[in-house]
Length: 304
Ligand code: TXA
Ligand code: MG
Image (cartoon, rainbow, N blue to C red; front, side, top):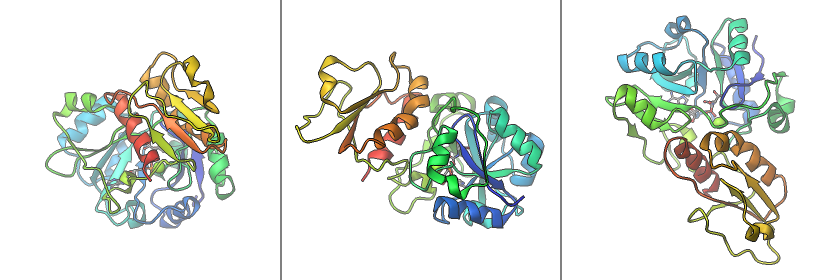
């Protein structure tokens, strides 16, 4: 115990450590070059572990857990004193989730302790959806990488805070606002954060490529690309013949399916980023359902 293990979840790969061990948590922050003010998510595999992590479980939490766990939903709740301050960045709340992936579940069970894990990428970069992505970004800093193949969801979990009077959506994900409000009624949306966010995953620039990203104004809009510019294009459906002046094109889903697009999003961004392009142009998608999470990640990637 005390080491770091990268592991697959249904959303993205996590960089895990014993959630009750502050020295291990310190290694996670070091490996990722993550600022200490950005708290980690605590992963559990059965409800019996909840009592060791959170100090209160409101009715809304129980309803969401019944409906969506195990799955890509993280709940922010009052924390137990056993969770080290480093894990929660000194907050009196903790983010907790039960992943729906057999390898993640087996790991947590074998460890016999909740596992604190951020996404397994250097701070600020695009999250990893394959074991190779983890090795590319953090390989030398990690003890073990468990390879569970590509992640099925592809964007990070939905985060809901249940500590205030009204439930608040802190990060959109594949459990959609519509699905959440069907179970617990209306949620507020956290206001877009500036440089001093309460949850730093909300930092304006995050999930970012090295290559500058520009989001196009509409679905079929295309930029004027000059002769000496090498531009990449990321789109949600088939490219058209007029797109051939782009140096690289990534199609997220040939049928415009948001689930497929989310699954391919980060790998496609990484491939484009590896090509030394001058700029990556991105088609926007409809901002409803899973499209809200996709556009959230793309906007943060494009923020300068
Ligand atoms: O899908 C996921 O959630 C993945 C997998 C590995 O589980 N994890 C992940 O972790 O995306 P990370 O560290 O990249 O993002 C966690 C987010 C951060 O934005 C952090 O600020 C927020 O959760 N967070 C953690 N604890 C919090 C708390 N007590 N209150 C508010 N936000 C919190
Ligand atoms: Mg992350």
